[in-house]
Image (tube, rainbow, N blue to C red):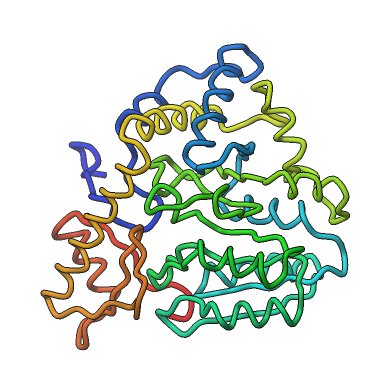
Length: 333
């Protein structure tokens, strides 16, 4: 920071993303107490806005945590000791599903795609038929390689191949960026985070649960305390939260959801598609190769560093010379 104050940097990382102006203004308001009708009304407003954002009539729990906390909450809600989990992974964040399940001593089976490739629907169907897992986890948009999965097709395949399997999706970099229909596609649990398309600071996770997921969660036996989705959904129906929430972030969430309501989800999807197409075209015009071999995500563009350029130096120079911050490599890349 200079004596003149901080220098504005254009934040173009996959997350955190640049803050929405109206959300930043809302979050700068004086602190309120969360056990008041003023805050309860904001929670109730957010609940309804999140249903529209997720495209579902089911309840969506608000958690004070990162998106990873939402992922863990989803698994402990549906699983008991000895249950089997199938993880479909396209990269670093898909792997996280398996890492969480393994931490609870669960049996994990894997389907892994090649670098820059989406999951193979035929392989998914075959594995589901063979092992009949309790839960099938996958990632809608894999940040580490900029690839998205065809969730509608995969959800249909899962229902046909193994109807008793619960479908759980990390949509942290998907919701708000491209068409996603939680209820229409029959996805049991969907996880999202505040620091992506909602343009808020990190710190909130959102988890939707279908009716059958809620019913199952009442009978499962993995340990849980803070990350108890059923308790949060019950509490938040009246505007309360089970524990002290990130009050300012929830206030910002209400502002962000109003903004999405004004522009409509379809409008947000069109805008993200336009921006991502422009970004890919610009990189290709420069001769920069993209990582995705098909199905590029509209929420994040992944490209290979050109031969002869040192990645760390590129990131440093973009920030120092142009005040643009992008992200570097992730996972195996």
